[in-house]
Image (tube, rainbow, N blue to C red; front, side, top):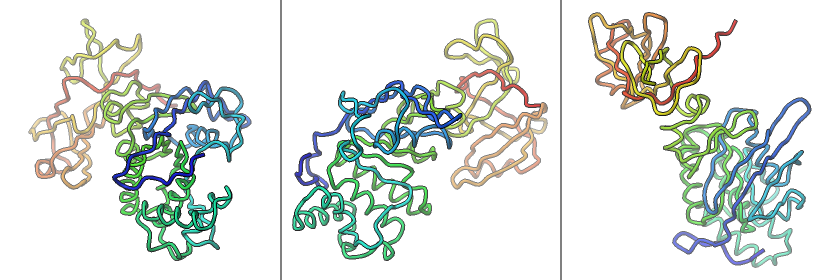
Amino acid sequence: MSTATLPLAGDTAPSTSATVEFRSLRRQFGATTALDGLDLTVRPGELLALLGPSGCGKTTALRILAGFETHDSGEVLVDGEDITRVPAHRRDAGMVFQSYSLFPHLTAADNVAFGLRMRGVGKAERLRRAQELLELVGLPQRAAHYPHQLSGGQQQRIALARALALQPRVLLLDEPLSALDAKVRLALREEIRRLQQELGITTLFVTHDQEEALSMADRVAVLRAGRLEQCAAPSELYSRPTTAFVAEFVGTMSRLPCTRTADGGVEVLGRRHPVDGALPADGPLHVLVRPEHVRLAPAAEGPALVVAAAFLGAVTRLTVRLPDGTEVKSDLPTEAAAALPLGSPAALTLPDRPVLVDRAPTPQP
């Protein structure tokens, strides 16, 4: 492994960014399938978010890549080399966990330099590199502080610096922001993205938070029950989800019953809407629409009734109920929403094209 110093802001990013490939990766824990044939490629230098609900396999995939977990079948390749039999300490990956995992008896500088010490790097070089990394994460003045003297956000910055100390080709981040309060989480989110772009390091970021994934990642891979549902740029994932699971997991959706039309479109609330692609073959259908695409207006005899309102700052999210009991959400400018108080009737306008058309869920007994 190279011992050249990490570049600071403005320097040239390293050319060691790796391609990571998961090929038909499977992992079973008793009767639970954590990964069910995962196929996914992470491009050199990109930040890819693994997004999904608890138990979908995202952390298992990360731990197998890091060498902390075994697999049952499949391959994990880094720059074309299968690393599944390579010991964890030789995989050239740095990892940051949800818990800060700092050594309480070591200073911030010594925590950062710990891996360098294990590699036999001399004390002077270790301290120089540690100070350089502390400057990189904005904490040069905290070198002599112990973990208990640091805030949660500062401790996670130290953990990030430690992960970068050995100049890994791949950086692995497992829910690194979930233990932090909202303001610190936002600041560190921006800091991680800045550092990743400056260093050009291939990064996998595990999260269950949609906003984190969409705001930080070059691409987002949505996992469900150990399988890849969709991998795309954040804007594409949000605007053009390929499955109903992705559509409803990423952002807010409303479902409305619809019927097929003879020309391959659908009819909703008496109005025809064109559809991109083929409709599901049979069964009752729903259209899925985003709240920002639904328009409401006061109407003395409108079909919708305002039943809830949530103030979100510049917009207010109104929920209206249709005569059949269907509830639809709409994001309106807060001033416009004031004209639609709770209990008032409203006219509802849907977008020309729904985000997705899906089979209606089977009613639960």
